[in-house]
Image 1: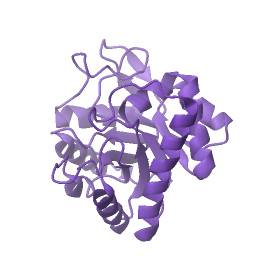
Image 2: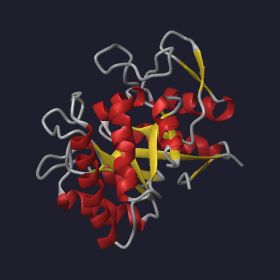
Image 3: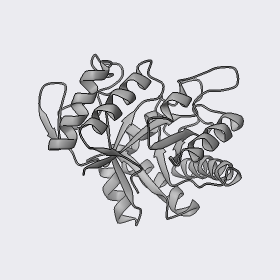
Length: 252
């Protein structure tokens, strides 16, 4: 029987400002990328999300970002390696404290937004993120875009990696994500997204925005928690997978 991890970005509410439907998503996903305060989230939201994920035996990951709350972590930043190492250690450490308080642990790190896209292709910041993870806990895994150089760098540095694919994002022929500034960057039809992911599980292939068929090796599927269609898409994917005998479970 085939199995796959289904992850989502959660814990992104802040004080009275609400983002996404975490309660519904936690009933559907097997891994939760929890915001650590730099792009979204606050201490109370972090703790609540960790507790709810732990209660459902969902794998917990640190969703780390550039310090960019106003831009929701989607603005690129030319930070030094030392600054970035400190930022990553700070965020992972904060979530580890929350996890310990909830009787669970952080199992992986997934960069967010502009940081995620930047390190996929640029070595200097990629190595800073990798080194920060190793300084905090070298047993933590790095989740990143399948097929990109950052995962090879992480493996070479001794980190385990989780290559992921995005259910709700368009892909370029080069296997990268279509910029959110371009048409077709974000997908919205839940049934089409579910069928697209079923095809990927069965064949390892995914259609790019120009029709090119990409071969991708990935162990986790992401549905963005901040999308208005997130719950419907995650539910459609999970229900279709269950109907087809595909188990949704944490990657490890």
